Length: 123
Image (cartoon, rainbow, N blue to C red; front, side, top):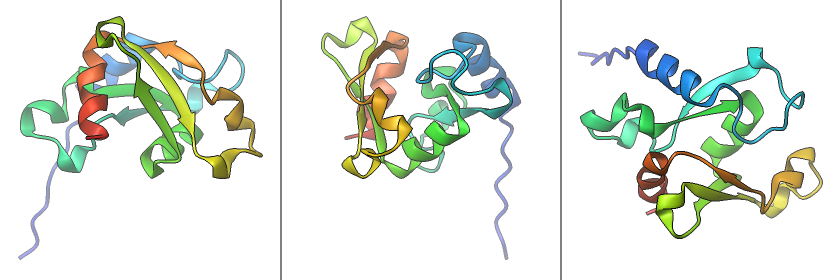
């Protein structure tokens, strides 16, 4: 017997898109709205039920950044104090010769509510 898990992400995706409006990493004109994807911070498969569709567990990324984030080649490191919502972008050295590496060590601000999910992801 195959177990089929149904996902209903529509309201989750809508809420995350409305919160951020654009890819949180790329500069204006660097990526296109058609490439935006909603990413789970704490991986969907590992989430407890309360976190799966919690917009605080989501980020808006372009497709390239999303793939790098999911593969662990790009990470978002929370900066203390965590209540600031600031994160530092960390790129794996294998990306050193890519255009994405220009974002290495860049500090951006998310919502403070996103930080606990980042801490869980990297715990």
